[in-house]
Length: 89
Image 1 (cartoon, rainbow, N blue to C red):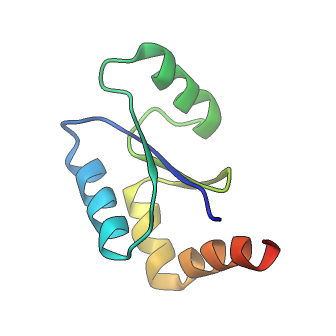
Image 2: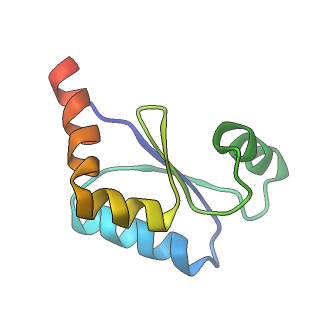
């Protein structure tokens, strides 16, 4: 099963857009809210090498943020990332 993880903040409009598109596509994801969690935010920074939210991981592959999600959706990369895991299983 594909593992999708998102680091987000509760007040972030880009995080809300990311979650909305994933929900619309029927993609289950695990949300790590870093709004008030400095340790979890530090984990996000180490994993992604970025300081902004959202940060999206698919099966431990760092896709990036909201703009990266839309680019991956438009180019077909998102489907390939999601499909790759199904073929392995």
